[in-house]
Image (tube, rainbow, N blue to C red):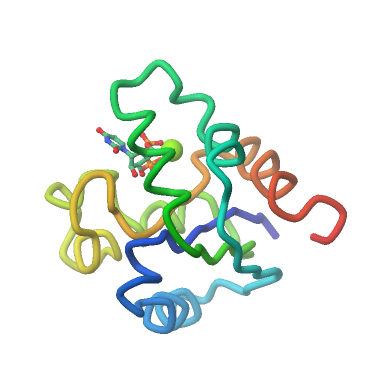
Length: 135
Ligand code: UDP
Ligand code: MG
């Protein structure tokens, strides 16, 4: 079974959307094989998003993702990476389908409530980043 890495981001945690998002995860037949909550330091956030370091939004993205508590989950399902990206919707909530999490909950293109790995190899790297030996 494929695994992916999901994050419920600070804007969603702050607005008490953890329960409804986890409920959507379960209703869409993902198995949750690991979960933890933490707040990233600025340094950890910079490392996690390092592939975006040349982008104009990088500094503000790093500040945002480390601005509060996050919930990090390992999700399991057939085709989990693509399935979770589909449930989230595209980065910009204005372009997202009506039933997607980002359309329903995101505030804007940055405060977009959820993260998902973009490929199986990224998923593996991100699962290691958050869970190391514990996954
Ligand atoms: N982001 C942003 N401005 C943009 C594009 C992205 O602030 O124009 C933020 C947003 O929080 C996004 C994250 O940077 O989720 C990572 O960007 P990516 O392109 O990887 O989007 P994702 O894979 O999260 O859909
Ligand atoms: Mg991405």
